[in-house]
Length: 231
Image 1 (cartoon, rainbow, N blue to C red):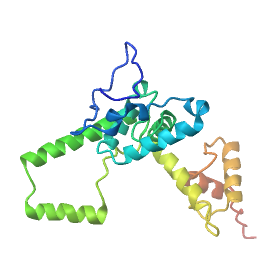
Image 2 (cartoon, one colour):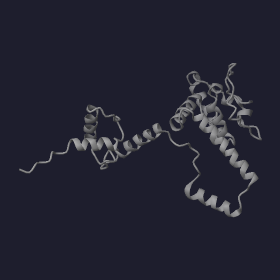
Image 3 (spheres, rainbow, N blue to C red):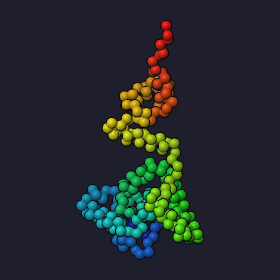
Image 4 (cartoon, one colour):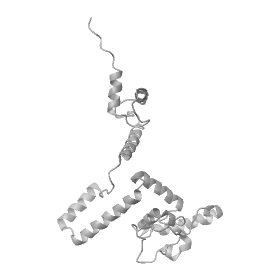
């Protein structure tokens, strides 16, 4: 792996075999000028102006690199080998943030998700080579992509991810003036009262987000005015 910025591996460090190290037909800037991409935490403190200028030059070079996408993916899935250096215009701190965002979006096994996406992509490419699309089918595929965009390869969301997305959606809807904070049409004060009542009766409700229909119905039934018997 003739790439600058790769930390000296320990005996048990090895790259993830599911993600091949990217290569270019022509030498990249990082191969011709490795010192430009040599960056470690603390460099800014030593010489902030020189370090920032070097980072800007490295990032501009990465912007025009034909393998920048695969370079970033390789750096993200091999953090023990990329503790220093600029990869695809990112510093080690930025890559740590990206890994956290990937874990939030795809789950803790986000590396497995990316590997599965790559595997499926390779299989589709191989199938296309052996069974190329007819002109008519190619037109349909192209039209579908133009109208609907590329097909999503994401796995079905877990129940925890679905609940988190619902909470975010309802929080966002509640931020608009004049829109009720809950799909039931109740105000925040009313929802707070429902939660307080539910907990006092041993019912489980989340601190934020949606309240189940069964809890709302139980609350409404408990607070209905008693019927007046005819005398």
